[in-house]
Image (cartoon, rainbow over all chains, first blue to last red; front, side):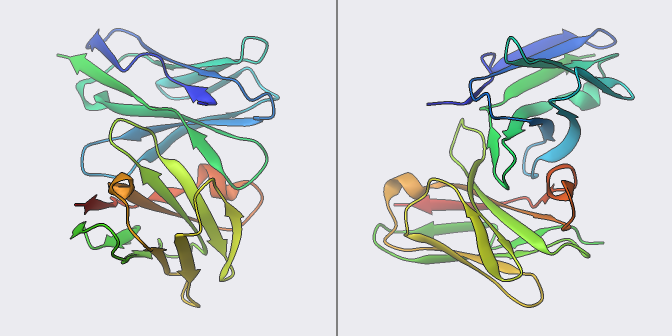
Length: 111
Length: 116
């Protein structure tokens, strides 16, 4: 049973436009959410996080939105750049030392 | 700063064999977590080590065991290998501190294990 779901395996976006990556979760005990970016042959890199007490967190071009009632979060990248092309993982924590990851969404930013 | 390093990069084993994977954490980090990433899946948490003790374990059988050394480096051991153990094994390190392990978790490039 997947507790963190990324239903879009891939996404293509034109350079300069907005990229929106989505993530749904089923475990209501999750209280902290993170996004990681992964390039081929490298480990995942932390991008941005959000606590369940907030509904938005921004860091430069990256914004994460959390809708607790819908158990949904999204990552917005504005403007998208070719260097953003990577696999993006959504992850969640339920107050323990364990992170639960989704399957990832491959983002391709077309120049 | 070398970041998180893992060895070996690739490994091929046969069913029933045992394997040991190694991880050196980023300088200043004292907590190490291990993840298994099967093809097309996200990383799945195996366990986390702090102060040479396993303090959290995911849903993995006892065939998976680990160790953390006084210098904070860590090993992952898998016994009686199965075909389904073929995956990328990721090590992540972080500093101890309230919540730090989440936002400040750095991953290594992983070890690709193939079981034939």
